Image (cartoon, rainbow, N blue to C red):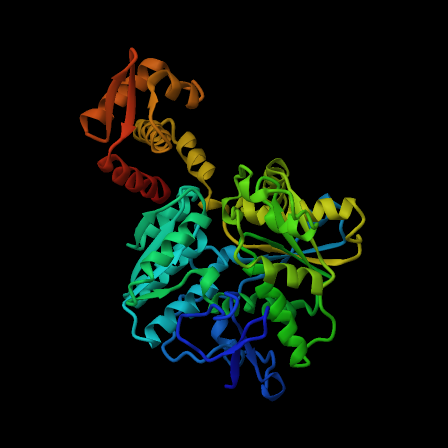
Length: 469
């Protein structure tokens, strides 16, 4: 197979340099460019439903690790379409991948390449889904996974990383901080870098989503994608472009990139709000999978949106949560908040007349809602009749609150929503202190509590236990 690595920004051409995929001249993520006219590519039926059936337009990898990633359904959402007022909505349901997210496609390629190159250790900075995917594929390949996560990471995703026996290190408030830290680790040349923002195989794996869409329905009018660092929307766009280069399709879809209003830097760039000062603004959203303050692949995202005559939009957390419930009630599909943002954006664009009622629209559902923290809370609440779960639920919440910072009993009681008595809160605190999970100190007539190192370790185990049961 013939291909080169080319910078999509400055045009610099590089040789394949192992896991070093950043342009030497401008630092942009390099892109695989193939000899498209000489690739005999088609959608002939095959027994193999995973991404490796597209090997003719993937990088050369010999030792392939697979858990059955790819081949996810493209669902026609009739009830959802009626509710929103659109003729047809298609949902590309990536929740049915092995670890319940689209990142399995990228993880399969990166872990496989790491094996090819002889690496025994992989490091990955992630705010959730990719970290869980890398952990799973490393477990299958018997490679050590070191996942760097920010504090803003959903519990369910952390639980996956722990159950796959990955080494999880918390660094910083958001993914931006974790990306800085991972560069220090990479001074150890024994680590393969599987960070999405640093590795072009992420785009190669994720572009197969577009292949599957076209294989099932041809070219849609619109494709709506959640945006964090910006690489996902470019991945799908690259897939459509490559199919056109190989004469598989003629027309291209309009790409829509969606961010949460509480953190929408790429949307601001698209709207030319260069002096908005978003780098210094506080960020606030429950859609943690797309919470990135300084997106590394913003150039690629904007290229996909502008070249497709698409649009970048921001939606509120309230709109996201309403869309999440609507998706679950109408189609029985429970998506994480970042995924539900595509449904919220679709509704807005339809109301604004940007999308027509007769258009064919694909919404990318990137990951399952079972990874979101309030799901675990719901599990706990449903199990209140069982004293073990009730007690465990309160202790878990107390530990999580103390993980955010030092606090005192009354403040904790208020934060818990006053669902239990303040006496019960102090009883839980005493029990936690007896087990050396928290420690206390008197300051100005108040007894302040804080999490111990042992408490942090047990907190991680409790979160995993809640997810499993």
